[in-house]
Length: 300
Image: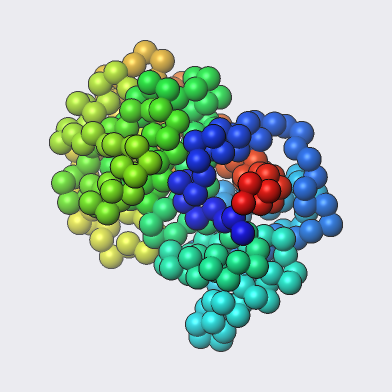
């Protein structure tokens, strides 16, 4: 039973095939008469709406389920919840605090599990990101992607997806917020290396894509002031974008805090592809589900 918990659950060949399906505007109705359970321990604008519309476009019916309705390991074990949901739904997609919950779901092996976000990765966002870049540049081989800010779950999945497709990956952020050694080992296992820079301008020099994320993610609210101080030299502004390639675009997974990680003139300016990127969350979800529920299971 194939699931999608991180980008490297796909081979490079499979990732390229999924991207083709993401770009296909007329996918087969592989969910006709079926449902997809959308489990949200953490709320989200783009994730919920993109998944619901993608399921609808594939002919299926999405059902949004709040985490407290299931009560993982309080009302019922994770395994019992999935055993129940698999009797109703073709697929279960979940946005969780702890990645272990997704792993336990997948180990039951009754239906495919999709990671909508966990503390270790955000592969659906990464898929939308690489789709955005492929639409912009044709392919990523030899392109330079520079991520400025926090070496978080978004960056790990992004580095994996773009790196698997041949992009050079750069990172600049405070030394205490770089990728962990464990994350670097996971990336190295699929042939992806990250070049780290102390200064944002050095990382962005000649880049084709400049990417950032909020400095404080959901669940880190107690660290807001500490993080603002640590990241104050890593705002993406027009001066920084001028160091990038002439064809460079700006990406951000949203929500954005203008004046912190990015200035308004960049995110709302001509180099920004943020709203294309946001829409591509829907196309990415549609392509991934179309592949996972058909070719993905056949390949297994």
